[in-house]
Image 1 (cartoon, rainbow, N blue to C red):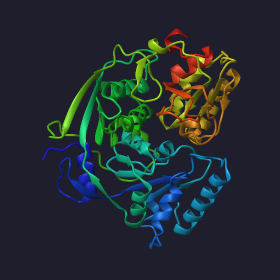
Image 2 (cartoon, one colour):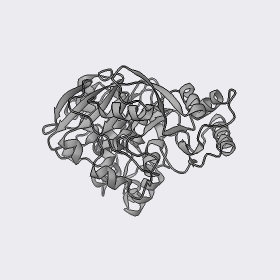
Image 3 (cartoon, helix red, strand yellow):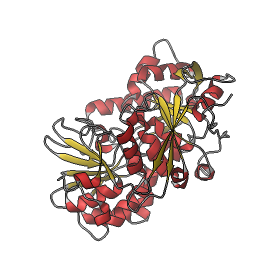
Image 4 (cartoon, rainbow, N blue to C red):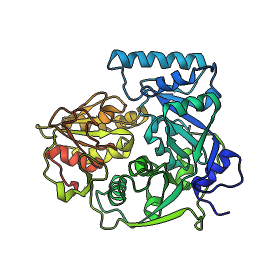
Length: 417
């Protein structure tokens, strides 16, 4: 039976011989992740009648949303989760120093192709960039996983995004995925596996593939996926020693839909308030004044993003009318950026470099925007109130647009810098 990549992974995890889209299956979980914000609720549910988790080695806990603790409530959550980690013997625990969960898990070798990965965070789909079926779940579902190591899934249909062409200068993976979301809408891939294929995807780095998969949820997707290749294998070298099986979609799979995209003429894209699918070319919103630039998050806080922004900012000052926050996605990225001199470029330009964490992305920690303010962010969501005041506005862009705009104090096409 011809099957998609998502179907094959779920079939393997369920122990069945085959499965079709729409079927309900019970799958064994390979990795279960939670963090400081959603973890306490998962643990509270889990503790009802259960004394021990099913497998402490398959649970990963990362503190990233409110780190260091910025309130008594956050400090209490941290204490509660540290106690749980100790009681359960969970070795894969990353306290406040490591960074954003969706970057830390691949870096530390927890993600390999062919696995089923769940996390109490909607952007868990990021890990599909390494060929895993990864998806966000709720705290009650995570409680079941903690207790049993299993979870039910409806097998999703698959949309294959066949991306071809050469990306123009100063156009990046973020622009590609924003363009896709703008075209198909925030519900255009509801409960479907979004598989990114084509020559453009193959030419992308693992970091750029993570950008595509990270934002699959913003078009309603159940997961994002990229077929493993030599780049995947090279990324895993030195990170993971776990055996893995790579899987590929059969082109004649019955649940496969294909959408063709050519990027040869693509220009930088901007998601405008207050929806991620309200996407326009930068030329249509250029000149919009901003108050804050946020470079970071699980979408665009990786080393290549920092390099792109630093190249634009080197020797220049950010506008005195704005503030710019630079937040590397992990300690590994932070130290590499420091070794390369990137952090010095940001500091010299007038930006504020913060510790690896989610920052203002979730609207619950550092760098919030106030009433009437406008934020330009490299993160993944711009819903009303997402980064602070419900009377603020958030625009989304690539790292290049963010850096160019920081210099001018207004949304700027990086091709003009």
